[in-house]
Image (tube, rainbow, N blue to C red; front, side, top):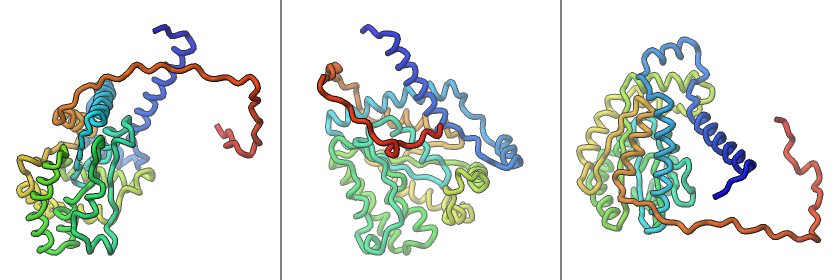
Length: 303
């Protein structure tokens, strides 16, 4: 394939834009008070170096595209459940997984607090409509396991409702797997100290303050209760047909790469051959004259 100089320059610009996107995603230095920033730098674990991280992130995202193509070609149904402590990094993992995928194939489900009608439904009902159909990948940013975690710890569900959940969820997930859904369940884990530091960052960083909620603050108070709830959940719902996988998240970069590697290792995908794409010649009409649009339609060129 012959590429002229103009096309080569365009490709270089596209590559630079890709790198810029990655850097923008990874700009993690918060707008913090100096004392908080210094405390975090002293206590944070040694992060994976940027060269290793970016090289592997791009490689894995390329493999995610191959997985996506295989899912579409074979009609596979993939469901990935992401659970974990508040500030454990599951949102960052999800973002990197789907960053370069087709949003018509790979979708993220993050349901809000159930309304009054949903509260009266069968507990799993509001989740069922979001399950993947053939050729789809769905990632749940929190799922029906809310009942095992926040609802149980905060008293939003009665002990009887929690007991019924644990009785029903193995059968529910067995039905999902039997229907052909590839089910992966991940628990993102961080230490007590790391969560405290991340909450402090959110509190003092104007760009991240929206991430902290009253429920997050209460999760700090109830750290041990959440731990007991997590241990119970893993003990009662870790089944051979629907096992849990724990992702250590104190280092966000390693957390993302390790989870992406594992997802790819658990799905028997392969590269799908595509027909060679040829760019057709543009049709030119010599009698067409492009109209001049009024200036007020254009966004002002501030930059």
